[in-house]
Length: 217
Image (cartoon, rainbow, N blue to C red; front, side, top):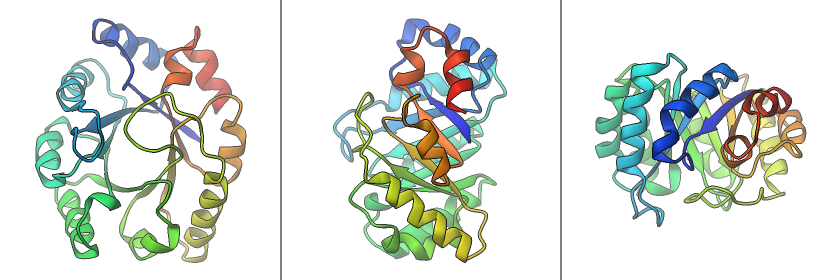
């Protein structure tokens, strides 16, 4: 299991040093939580653009962008300049399944990997048809919109269901899980089939990034 460290709760005056420290601690990705104040209550778009500028200047670790926004195309156009490894958008932000397909194809045009995110109340069955078309399924284990929330326990069965379908269809689609992941539940999350775990508060608030990331893995 790889670790994608969320920079959401990193203070702006500490961001450069934190990026260096996380690189030394061997995070696999930097997770960028882009919120627009519409799809979710908080607005982090300006802060996250600034963080992406720093990342492009000082590290080669891949950028993992997670859009929690209503106007998906506008944000794709705004963030592709940072050469992200993957761009993930929310299924629930699309008006219909045709639009989901449109954004999947649009991101691919930029030679970028595509992720599809689902909220806790969205079923795997509802997005099953998209699994062969995407590189990653992001399963939210908290309600999107803010960091530091508690892991929703029934996410475990949801991960298992997704993994079963991906295996049955013989796909290489990765499963990323985001929200409330820490040293206590990382092992269970990994064993259910998660390939990338997003962790923010549990890493950023720890005294030793390297210890925390190593033990999560």
